[in-house]
Image 1 (tube, rainbow, N blue to C red):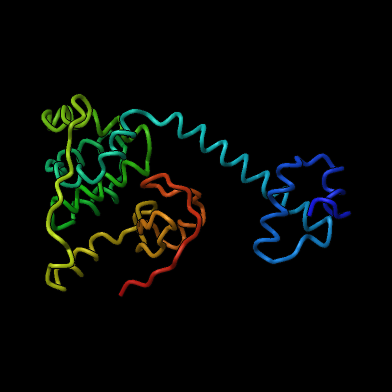
Image 2: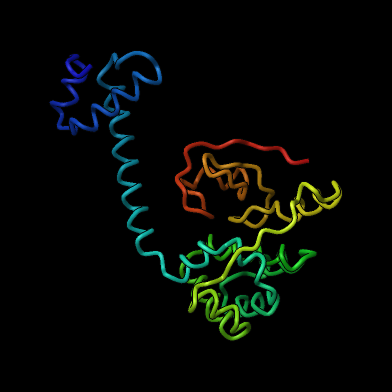
Amino acid sequence: MMNTPVVKAALDMGFSRRLVKQTVQSKILTTGENYKTVSDLVLDLLNAEDEIREEEKERATEEQESDDLSYIRKNRMALFQHLTCVLPILDSLLTARVINEQEHDIIKQKTQTSLQARELIDIIIVKGNDAATAFRNSLQEIDLTLYKHLFVQQDIKYIPTENVSDLPMEEQLRRLQEERTCKVCMDKEVSIVFIPCGHLVVCKDCAPSLRKCPICRGTIKGTVRTFLS
């Protein structure tokens, strides 16, 4: 596998032996045959190096994730249930220019507080550290009890509730309709499921620019297009 003229030529160019071996193994596993030309191997090696650099950059960014954002991401589902003062927090975040008027209005139009909370928390997670800090400050002013459970005592709990599949079909469809706005552009409908995490949170136009799920930060290994009617 490593003794072909093509592989030796790549090694002579200075590419890491480990990277060459991994790339060749991947080629054999996916196509059943080794590289036939040096140019094809070099192209894949350069792409692999770019991916490694990008992953290292993302790891460095993740290490800089604030405690506030980490707590919000970790307790995302619990916040969907316990965050009831959504509208005053929305107004506060709009004033602080953390969210824009379009995002504010989209969330405000949701018919249930839990759906407003879901949309708001997901937007904060997507926006990152600054948004998380602003949310923390707003929550401290508006709902001190929830603030303490989330950020101080860190004992907020998710309570399993109703099974959505047990709801009438009309109610399921209505909830789906309200949850289907892309969390990145806040404009188009969600249509891409990330593999392996399974989150359906972005549209087909925003998905290609993402390497990690904006909700769970899991690496995206693949995507599946969905068509919601």
